[in-house]
Amino acid sequence: MRSIANCFCLSKAKNPPGFEEHTILASETTFNVNEVEALYILFEELSSSIVDDGRIHKLFELFDLKRNGVIEFGEFVRSLSIFHPDAPEADKIACK
Image (cartoon, helix red, strand yellow):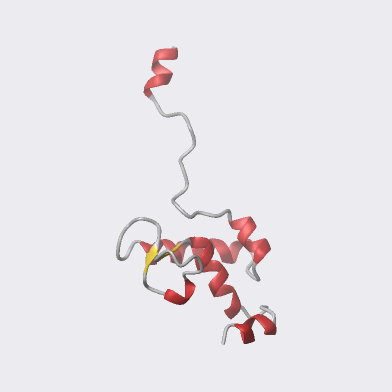
């Protein structure tokens, strides 16, 4: 039986590079978990439109918080959070 188990990868599927838990992003931004999940779907569509690697390349330089040439999902959510209606006014002013 052990030899059969060795033939199959029994570990969980790995998350794409830059993946961050939706609950953590919701706790750090003005988005709730459902909104973060919807943003993840949008992010997946955008990130696969140029190079299908789970990142957005040079599409929104302002969102590239790490300045590494790509936008990971966490950067995407944190950058969009200033546009949320419940975002603090100070955050919106600081972005100008």
